[in-house]
Image (cartoon, rainbow over all chains, first blue to last red; front, side, top):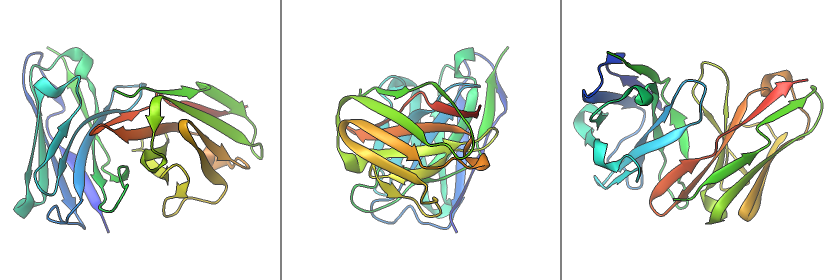
Length: 122
Length: 108
C-alpha cells in the first residue's frame, strides 16, 4: 500500500525559505523509473506542478519556478524534501507530494499525499 | 511550455446525464502522456485516466478517455451523485508536467 504524507510549516513570512518534507511508504525510490513530485494548489485555483525527483537523483523543475526550487531525496529515510526560496503571499497554497510509477509512458501521478496548507503572511 | 485549456469551465448536469469534458493542448501531446484527475472539496486529486484512455485502478467504467494530438476528452456516461467534482487534465512533455485549469461538474 503506497502512502505519502507532507509535513512542514503552516505559516511562513514573506522572503523566508519554505522547506517541506514528503515521507512515503509502500515503494522504494531506488526502483528504476520511480519518481516523487510536488504539486501545489492555491485556494480555489488549479493544480500547478513544481518539481520531481527520479530514483537516479535526476531532477526536473517547473521552468517558471526553477530558480527558487530545490528537490532532494533521502532514500534511507523514505523522504523527499522541497525547498522554495523567497516566499511571497502568492505562494499561499496546499502543497502535495505524489508518486510517479515506473514503466514506459507512465508520466502521471497515481498516489497523492493529503496535502499541507502553507500560508505566506507577515 | 505546453498549455492545457479545459472547457467548459463549469458543466451543470443532472444525475444520469452524460458529461463530456474537453482538454486542448497548445502543442501536440503523445497520447501516452495525457492523464485525467478528479478532485472533490478538501481532498487530494485522484487519478482517473492515464495514457489518454486507460482507466486507473478503481476507476468505474462509466469514465472513459479519448483523443489524440491536441484534443482530448473525458466522458462520464451516466453521472452518479459522487461524480460531481472538479476534473483536471495533465500532460507530460519536454521533461515538464502541466495541468489544465479544471472543469467543475456541478448538479443542475
